[in-house]
Length: 192
Image 1 (spheres, rainbow, N blue to C red):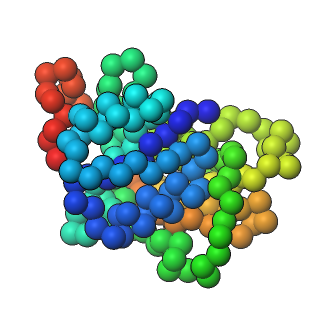
Image 2 (image 1 turned 135 degrees about the vertical axis):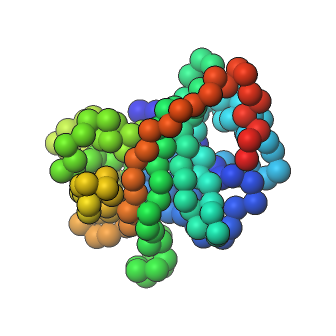
């Protein structure tokens, strides 16, 4: 399973920080990487040196998490050619009591999406395993449900349930977008 590092653009808002905490609580083998005032290139190199294979950078617009970019940290650092546009978000603090959750060891995806590219993006973002649920019944796990809210617009709704079928983590409305990514060797990745 890929080790995933979640970080923010510079000067994140409290809502973006809380969103990252929510994500790390439900994404197996993931950690929050404080960025501070480091530039993007330094932050990505630091994650690579710590053994992370995927970096997820969450950008904010008007105080809200808005745009999620992915980087492969295997070999050369490379920005992947898709991103997630967050269209709506409910943080776990907004709907559930404060309780200590155990981080899942694994997550599975139950999806009605008919697009294998969208499912692959969600697998990278959410650390989804290809294992069968039968192999980890005794472990802590989270089930990720993905369904279209508006298939024509490509709006997807994501929610997380723990092994007791209780809601956990954030509820997210998102859209997966294709991007034209410049060759990272020609730019210094400092375009925040």
